[in-house]
Image (cartoon, rainbow, N blue to C red; front, side):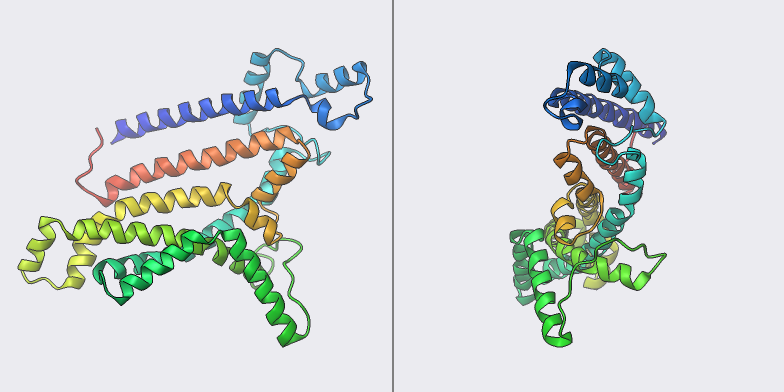
Length: 320
């Protein structure tokens, strides 16, 4: 197990290094900071001065090693658009909203999808199973941003008819430490819109994995010994069927971190997704570069945690 952890850690660093080279190269190919910060009539001296200030006139290998060294120190550089603000400050300010939204959406997905998937598998080809299939099909067919727009329109109409004034998305993110009620009211609707989409994926995976396990010989032996269906499912089948479900849950959380761009725009949440959109619009290369590496690091870390969790859930898995 220790050897596996060391090897897997090495693989993670190699993956991060490859991604860092790709991201660094694409950012440098996309242009110079002068293209975003200076007007078209800027002189050659002005361009050279700005490029020297941002260090982009050095050889590429020098820029890359300096970028890696600063990244290990937690220094991602200064923002082009938000003058006087470092990239680390911007990410630290926006990441709580995205993490909380991803966590609430994932919680909703798991709480809804896992019991529904288990019920569909146990009650195969019955009304609960067909209802679960329709739920999953609708969830995978409806884009989360479109569902979010429908929720906003529904809230606008309902609040106008009931309270006489329209409900509008919040202007600024409020921390749960400052006002828990306002925080929940901000996150519950985008979490429902996003969580429904991914609950459909988790429900279908739970149903499929559990059906495969229920066909195994040891399950039939448990039935022959007189164990109740509840004990067979909870003590034997579910634990073995949960490995692919764990993978899907972990990957969905990773997608939440990097894929909430449209949802945050629709619900006016100042998270990482909206920060990425603003950075692309204003060609803020340092922020784009840092955000990409943060999202990649989350993917790598979650994959690493899932691999370790496999051995804990299934004693048949042994890493050498």
